[in-house]
Length: 640
Image 1 (cartoon, one colour):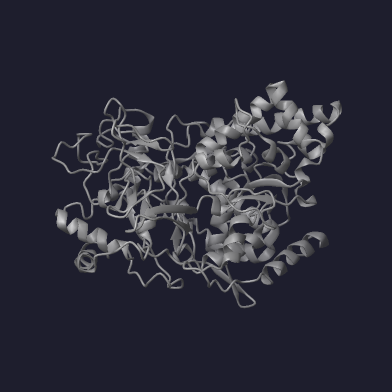
Image 2 (cartoon, one colour):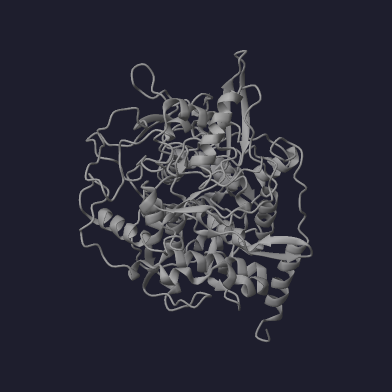
């Protein structure tokens, strides 16, 4: 401690003091446990995400259009949700699109990437980014028996938004603004005072050029030909690729595209789980108690990685004595969010949609016999305190699409400015190294900058060195003797899948993240589509066997057994609820096409070969039921 500068020590201790004094919400009021005020705060609070300067985002037009990206019509088309204009949301931004207030702490962030923005003071202005509610809020509409249309908000649910298209619109809009004089004139007229004089407009073009270069680098690193569609995002791929750019390597490996889109997980009860994320890679059970209030360091580390992936700024060149990195993260807000989330209840089945209790009772017996061992007992929607250790199932056993878990396990990048430095648990970074380890280092460093010695003392308890025993280079290369992903030609993807499945067959599969998570099913009725990659439209369909097999035993890509089978083509994007099968309306219209405003999800390509990332295999439990038993189990699941 004697090596700290007094300024560093005072700043870090003050940050810890601020966190001690954070208000904790009682969390009562609405059906899901939140008051209206809590809900509105969650929709508008900043976590430190900074996508574009606020004046830019509000002025930015769509490519080949005068419509703005944030216009209500475009936001509706992208399936983000509107939010009322208020003192918390003066710009009338959609749910989860939030202003991050500018301040001097951001003035010199990432100046090697944005030298002109730093020099011109743009980094200290207000920016707009996303918070967790943008991805974890949904709405469902349904018809009552009286044919009334009702629309209900699902807080903590899985958005139907099209994140991939949003980013493409922003980048293309910025590029056209830079190249099209008329578009630039309109943009400058909204951004600059009185449209700006020529020197100001010249500066603005230089600033635009820097942002375009950065966003283009992110787009190039993430690019995958696979369309995510509505309600899916390769969040882990985007986060790891963002980390690979933040470390500032002169040339980046670009062979890990973000091509494993997943459904947005529902997050009620998330603070009760010992592990979160579909593949359980984020520990969630290390608390510090300050002045009687818990701070979950596991959650803080997980949320830090999330915010870094969705546009937080982090400067790896600006470090503290403790090894922290300066960033735009808003740690007190992030801790308050997690506390409030711990009071969020799962949504209850709408009272005006009847449940056949006799059939549901038969379904409960089936659930207890066939499902309860993996999906932990339900203690009711009001239970927000019981801790759970989710059941983790190896990808080798689950037989589902492997790519979310596999890509994260194998993801490697040049370590750039981290090369030769050590993680807090001792691993020294090589020239090319595990990107997940770099994420841990940068997330921990961002927390340390603001959280001082408390995090340093607890850090080893959060990020235990499980990875040392589960690094990809510890497993033998494929011999080609195992047939997996049948129907997929031999090549890089197939060899990687073999490596992942070999690793997953070992006792360390859970530590390696080569597994998928079983969790309590309360509120499961409100979380369609199903499976981790959103490849099954309804709960009823989930209890049918799949045609496509992702198995180490079969040599056939398509199983020719008789129907019924899970649909390998359906429509995503409708908010209209199907209370019988439990999911959204997903059938194509009479001419076999998906209705306007929806996206066609295909398990197989036109050639009949399964699409990597879109496999709907896995979760074979319950697929052997009779039709009557299948319907009984669905009826029971409605009431959880």
